[in-house]
Length: 233
Ligand code: CDP
Image (cartoon, rainbow, N blue to C red; front, side, top):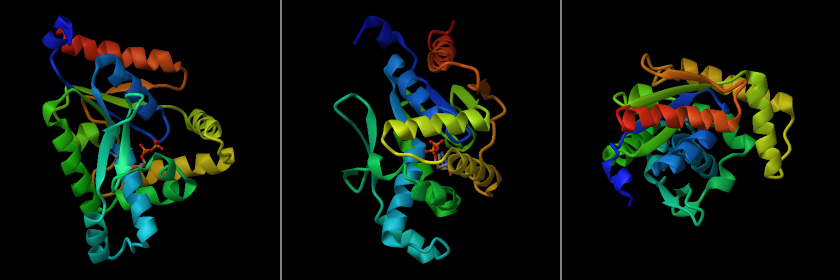
């Protein structure tokens, strides 16, 4: 470890915002640049949703939900490229959790309080040592209200839908732009209006609108903000 890195103050960076505004891809690179751990909290809700769908859980039945939560083990593991990947019950889950089916159910599952309690407690556990970049919807408002840096990312719906379509195409999946757009819109609506930990902009969050920013610009912006805090600039 370099001398400079030893002197670094470790902080928590919370990145919240609307669906598909580039939070995850940005957070991942920011974490790499700072030598921090990256945690995709959305992947935890997605993996839980996938497991509930597999087990045919009736989300209106609290007993079934609690039972299914007991059978849902979520971990993060660093893969060969140095990226943290989500594991569901011991298996890499990435390829199963970004489907339209999961997209259509994830906001409903994420609105269940017992699900949120389980995820939030694990997220706080991961953050005890700091040096973490976590992205989601409630990271700056609920999970880490004392995070040293809070970012609220957004972009126009049109740009977000196009970016998500391109991302899926790169994985060989084609979805109509209108279907992507309406899913993003309905998730934003559901995530922002749910009773438990809705998506809100924390009072002390810095807004980063990525509609007209390049990917590198948005990464640089957040890294600079983080370095100001880390090195007391
Ligand atoms: O990548 P994308 O922006 O499409 O979504 P995501 O970050 O993977 O999150 C998927 C869904 O999980 C969101 O639409 C929320 O319903 C839920 N979520 C949440 O409730 N709280 C979080 N901290 C993260 C995600």
